Length: 114
Length: 114
Image (cartoon, rainbow over all chains, first blue to last red; front, side, top):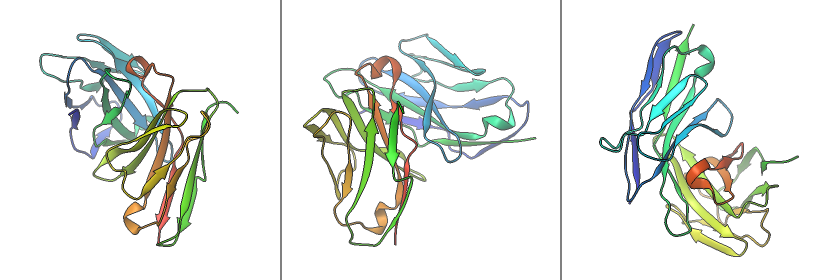
């Protein structure tokens, strides 16, 4: 079956530091990959996505590249801000059939201090 | 208002009581999903629905019941609440383009079973 493994948190950084959150996956076929963000007290919002190998998703200064050879989709940001403090979820979905079920990692809590 | 709404936002109930969490979406999306979020487990799929009157079990369905008589509504019922069902519950929907665009999530219901 499908699975997603994220680096365990919590991750604590100072403002303007470089961020990497590792994500690897196991899936059949060619999954689409996503990063969702959950700000305190809120639901999940799509941050970025990539639907095929070598695609780079980007949004709000965050980037992630779909690496099929290493089955990875690591999230990066060059300079984090306090407002980036949130929980980040890596997720995948495989097409096939009509289910379209999204499989999530366990989430990584990021805290950015001023 | 357009979008996906969950109600109530917060609920406290007693062990053994029946409780229903509501989910309503205004887009006429065919797919709807219920997840629970727990520390250390990330998000786990409880039930999903591909269309009105079509539902199926996810990863953790025991103790839950769903129905979908109308496309826009997907209520989740805990038949006899237990403390292990204390969690944050998220509803999500998709129009079938999830492989490309993922899901849209509601704001969640925080349920406490005492």
